[in-house]
Amino acid sequence: MTTSRRRWVRVLDRVLVAVFVAALGVGLMIMWRDQDWSSVGRLAARLGAGEIVLTFGAAFLINSAGLLLGLVSWRALFTDLGAPVDGWTASRLFFVGFLTKFVPGRFVALPVLVRMGRAIDVGPLRLASVFLLSWAIVALTGLTIGLAAGPAVAGLGTGWLLAASLPTFALLVRPSLLNLCLRTAARVLRRPAPPVSASDAGLRKAILTQSLSWVVSGHHLWLLAVAAGAPPWRAYLVCIAGFAVATTAGILVMVAPDGIGVREAVLVAGLATVMPLPLAGTVVLASRVVSALSGALVGAAGLALAQHMHRRRHKESAPGDAGSVAATPG
Image (cartoon, rainbow, N blue to C red; front, side):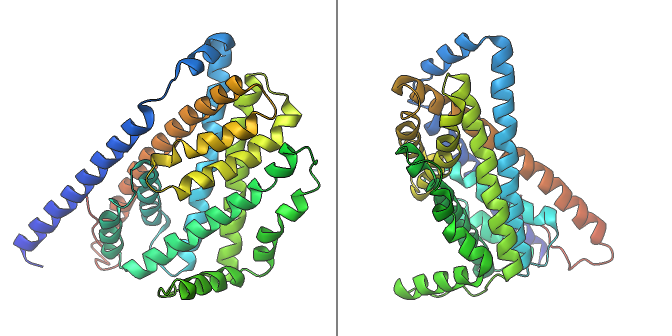
């Protein structure tokens, strides 16, 4: 590649990154704008300074841990599908894709992801397959865990948990069913089938860690609900399972940054069965604050660390194996 072409490539990379960062900022502003945060302030005033630090700090850490488990699930698929990169390089792609949930439409990051993938010899089809499989696992596990909220809200007890877990259990026994479902869906929609398929071991690890991610993250909502006065045992299943299904529903709405509005509506409906409606709305808004802060900070910090480690690995490998890890955009 000539010096002039390298210069234009670097300029294009910086422009793409700048557009993505600007879109991310717009998405975060849209998400925070037009929200009435006064009820969250009243809840914080009622708790007192010490309880605020403990409750919101613990909720932040819990949700951050759940997000990092999602990274483990994604990396399991990325490695399983044969991408010849190290964990830090894979994490860069995950965190860019993760931060797109705050961007309206979420498609502005596609050029950035494609260029990052090409820079490490991961073509668009393989990259798309990883994200498609990952999204399918996120949606399936979220909805499966969320099914447990229905019987609990209706007062039918927890016996339906077994039935609700059957889809995920079936995939753990026969992971190849997911690849079959994706190929069938592509055929029905008259779209090309995914060019690669994940192994049974890779799918099992991804499903287990993503399921655990939902369960761990849901505890932050339960902690906030109990702090607001919800009965701990009655609220537990509604919070854990309700958070999973509400967040999954928000993911399906591509135009809303981080599913804003959709997630809140689902959560309020669930929490209203175990606590007064005004308090339910307050807890949901408090959860939005925790989720937004933890998501943005974990995503930004994770991307910065992954980018630093990736460049460090590239510099170390450049003298002896210049072709093994290519330079990256940005």
